[in-house]
Image (cartoon, rainbow, N blue to C red; front, side):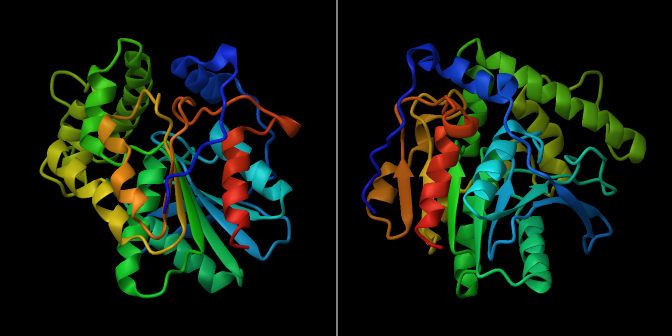
Length: 322
């Protein structure tokens, strides 16, 4: 598909990508949907907490959050409220360990983990009769979304009608390096993630004595954490193997449902390898939109009812397939 010309324009006070990113994440107060939680057991004796926000629609959007996020993240709350407002039911998945209660197994979640998404989709199909099901992912959840769509393309007709992925590190290795070694301000993001990840690591160490060895010091960078824990705990040899096998970029060419990828050109989390322009230009299903500004899952300011540009853009794209 031709590359999409973006309609997003950042106001003067949000032209800095870090301000755009941090305002959206920490200072915004979005409308909150009336979630109803459902817990489902997984085949490996664990659980997933699903948060539903229904408006009586026969269309459903399944939302996937980013690293150390959850159904209560501002970007999930804002999109859920907007989709409800335009008549679409929402199911926000909380990845393992991200619902407010630690999961039971040693494993948690990661950028390439798609089996839980597939399991939730099967659960929805078995218990509901939606006409259309959409998939929307942000950041890490966007990588999961795109990889899942590429994997599913080899299994027959898609169960997803259309999808949107926002601020996605489709090349995990270079994005990890961008976070760890990019501008000094990036250390704010790294510190936030590492503090949260290390806190969970300590809980897992208590849950599974002898299974986790943190050594003399806890990880201080994203690569270090992934190399010592994310990779080995999930069957990878280390960070490089994890990034190589979990990145969604190699799966993009296989996608066979209409999919919009929105990556701002000033996103501080993304490397140059996260803008697959040549691929999208000749792809029959992948639409690539690259606003000049927007930061990482930013795209402020709010408009009607405080909704953000990205939420309206997601709704606009999905509406083409209702």
